Length: 380
Image (cartoon, rainbow, N blue to C red; front, side):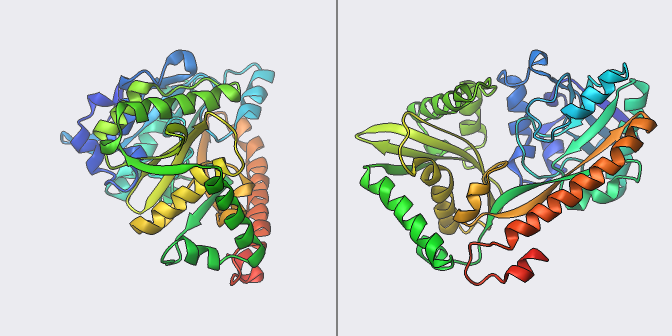
């Protein structure tokens, strides 16, 4: 077994990488991750330096992880700024740290890529040993699935958070989905959609191989505008959007709102095996209901037409509950090199997990679906 470190994902053959995870999650595709590097989306000045890990046996790739040296905590969505501050107060360096994640994407999916659990555990052990040799403060694995829990030993710190996901219960169309909601929720959503129609908006669903240059330029403008509105730097380039359209043509899904012949709003999603992932949105103008229609209702409609089972629209957003999105737990694991710091954080992590579960249960107890039993939902 030999651990290798890579400054570029292109150092690992795409076919070998993709064979480790299948094709259910588009964010783990070699095309997606390597595209971020090729098209200027990851820069050390922004805190991202690729340092991928791979494990080889007799010349064959048996395990791998998308990994990055981080000089800050931006773009991770698992917040550890307090940990960095605590290290600084005691004169310890927290950065750089080593992060296993998909940049800018709070999407649950495989992180320790391997066909066999033993190889997954071996990769993680090799990475911990490398972390010690390099004198790094910590190793983090963000948004991994529950199936990878077994790879982490008791010395790892476990964290949980809450996102809101929509699940297909076998509805034939959007009308059937609305019929499953409580009357007041159903009425509100119908009125919300009607406002958008009356305002003159019409929608196009465009896959990557159907997107023209004007579509991609418009979507990139919307993405940049939203980031600018919130005072953030847009890391994804127009060339990366073009790359997605050509390298992952049926994975890229755009919902574009038009009025008077102009494209005025859009949402960018990626499609997985049975899941639609909402990532970015933006608009030329503000109009009642336009954000909800573009980001959520169009995605639900698409899932129902295409037979997709799950719609994950991104992090945060309790307002999603009224639109049929229910809370689910996300998970991460963290190896802190200093035993004293790790022990001090262990109780805090346990309290955080308990708080996340209480919050999930409280929201489930107020499900928008008319046939959901609150007591049963709270115990889910």
